[in-house]
Length: 102
Image (cartoon, rainbow, N blue to C red; front, side, top):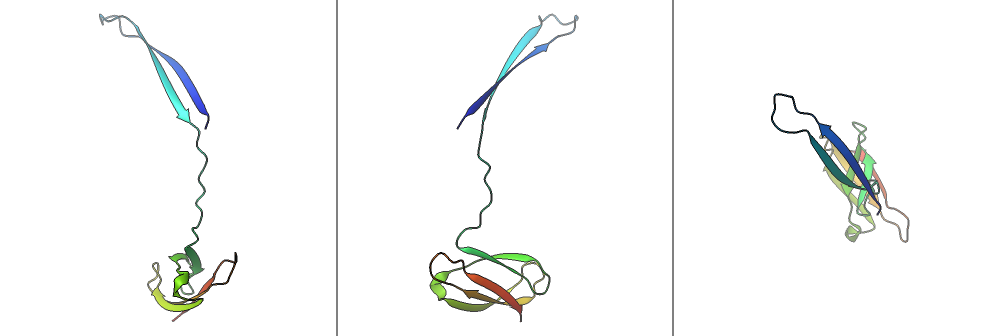
């Protein structure tokens, strides 16, 4: 990681009625450059489009439940029940997920 140092000198003048002398304040700010973290979907999450309201829904998936899974889950947006279908394939192929209205 690279560091960027920023040095800024700021002069403060006090009014003549004040008995304090003028002050010079030095501020040193160190800023660390960070890589932008793009939100990546984890391997144990998948998404489907709700057939009733059309919203994209992200749900957790678990391959230990079998290669072909089917269950009913309410949409968190419109609260209508959906039949969720999940198919797992071998290798590097991502799972297939879709929903039908119940």
